[in-house]
Length: 363
Image (cartoon, rainbow, N blue to C red; front, top):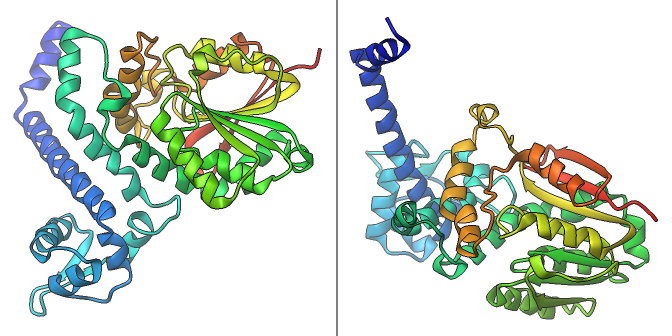
């Protein structure tokens, strides 16, 4: 029997076919649950339920300020997904306590916040399917609410860990306190650079991004916080031409979707003063597909890459590096950009990201 015949025999085995069908049904249910959970986060229902004892749909809707009929149907989905317990006699609903940390609150452990990416992917899936035939990609403007979703997702990690855990990886805390020049490239809505500017008032900060709408959000937050040591500039990192003017450069989850990431990394190396430090945070995965098979969130990474990160790069005529470029390729590209000292660090508080600390050698 040939290899093809053996594979064909397995594929037509009735038990295997049934198992595959059950797998697809599970995907159908889990995908639907992801959409409902995203809605639960966006409407504040999970936060409301986390504070309530067993309650009726009317009481839950009233507490959340929402329409009862929609709330009741949503609760039905969450009961069948086993997030919520239902008491038929009393007709009350109760969010299971073990789910509370994963679906509510401002902390980094709130995974329901990340599930909003699922609804975003659903909104653009039809357009992306068309790009499979024509090539190219979608512009940033074609992703509704992406800036807000990304800012909320990354902001939870930064609020919890940026100043106390992430920045110390650079060994530049004393310098930041004394006063140095810092750039955050691909800053998006600017929350990270504003947090740094607030924590280190003697240092000067600039946030670069080419999406003006995102920069406006960062400026507004800086104004609310009364920060005078931070500014925001619209600029494409691929054309950044700053020469040895920064002591620290940070990039949070933004290199892989650049049009020309190798050029961006070279520009960052050139922008650093001798002895300067580059902190790059990006998705933690392998550059080898076979090593990602057992990664619990690998399918999500490939999905968000297909529907967003790779696509926005292609829309700019870019290299389409993709979300899952992987730690190995990232480290190699840093070295090719000129960084001779590259360390890859894991943080237990953030299992999704790898932290790259690269230093520019002194002359």
